[in-house]
Length: 119
Image (cartoon, rainbow, N blue to C red):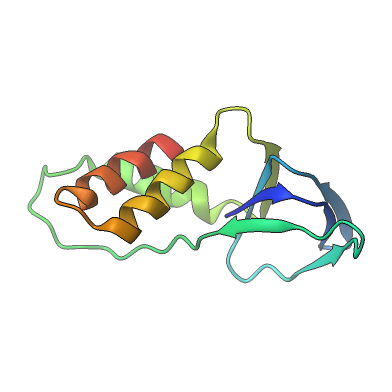
């Protein structure tokens, strides 16, 4: 997931061009070849993070299985997605970064909550 804060570029994916501007975010699926063509007069500044998952063998009923599977299926189905950040998602990602940096008591729970809001 990439949050563009400044600059612009075109993203080449599957022989198509997508133009990306400040306050846009995009999600690129795993294994999807992509190329950023950056305007040297207006280079991009972005914040990125990678989403990975591991199945934990937790006691039955801890989380609804259908919800876990639904979230995983949604991410598996994304080749490429771009949109304007109308819901202030960048601020949420910045809060997540601050939590990871400070690691104060309760940061892990706060990270989980912020990530769920982001989704």
